[in-house]
Amino acid sequence: MLNGLQKKTILIVVFIGVILISIVLLSAYAAELKVGNNAIAASNEALQGEIDTLGIKIMSANSIDQIEAIASSELGMVYADASEYVVISGDDAPTGSLALTIRGNAYN
Image 1 (cartoon, rainbow, N blue to C red):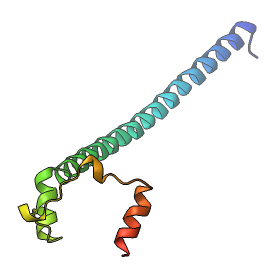
Image 2: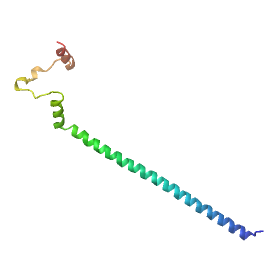
Image 3: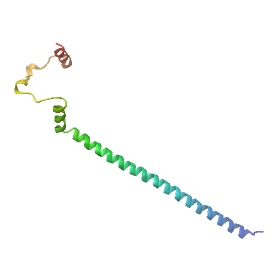
Image 4: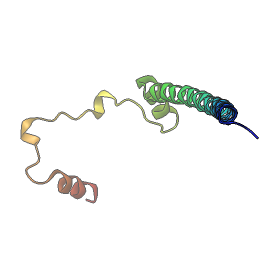
């Protein structure tokens, strides 16, 4: 039979063992979370690199030189000659709705 001191000692040893096992399990869980966080951080870095690349592509596509090249090569646009210029004065301002005026001129 165990006396009171031996029972207390066994209970303390068991309690300390449970605490140590809990610490090991929590450390393993924390390591697993850290690995997951590192994977997400790496994925975020890859996505940020792709975003930066797309931003540069957008900026280059919106440059005046690029727009002019596409307009002339793909759309066949050219600069107007001096004979094609239209001079607009204040007297030429439309009196009604601009949209209606444009529509009327387009279909006449």
